Length: 71
Image (cartoon, rainbow, N blue to C red; front, side, top):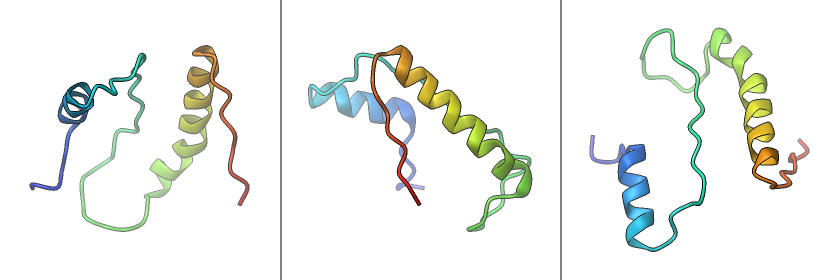
């Protein structure tokens, strides 16, 4: 589908615009299966907090100070 832009395309566009990031890390959760829907499956939802914590740790290693948005 044309609206699905992948990571390589995004990084190439950033390089063309001279805004390429100094560091790049890719984090994700492997889906159990690929079906269209709006809700996360419980098995994926259970990984969200773990994923966020790992991302925050990575940013802190890069000497960034991430702030959590309060609900």
